[in-house]
Image (cartoon, rainbow, N blue to C red; front, side):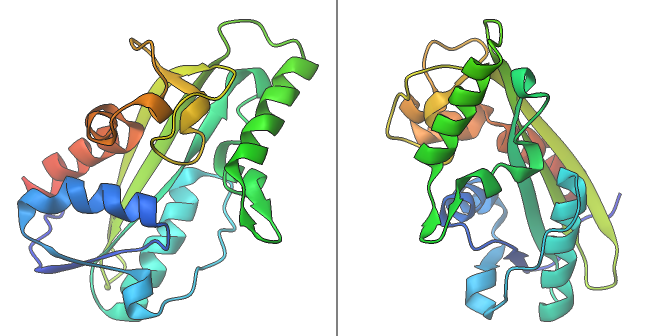
Length: 202
């Protein structure tokens, strides 16, 4: 496994919530972090049907454009009662002409669970795949997962995306009710980051 030995790393995202989480997780390593916005990079088309495929597209696009190593994440929620949907299309379910509306996406998810009379608990998992890519085309892949269940109604103002309806296993509160730093310790992204740090930074 290739170690990261550079001083600069591009976080290949335009998502501020994601960027803030990654900055916090990488803070101990003294790496200078920039984002796609800092480099004026467009959002590449995510044409793959897997988390790893889309993360690879984003990481390699940023590494090639900047000449720097780039870290990308593709993540989403898989709901068992919906046969794994929305999965890689998690953000797409929130798209509107005026930007992303995750309340709408959560309402759709619950309505579809109701329409198929999905049994309780309505199990689900947040998935995150990190890809660290270098300008020479090499990459390393780190998957993470956080199992839990879908609950209703929405609870909590913390976090982003589907957090208000996702209750992680072992907890009586949703990600939306959880302190963000507590969530950062146990989330699917934290799971993937622990693997990334052990593999490339330790």
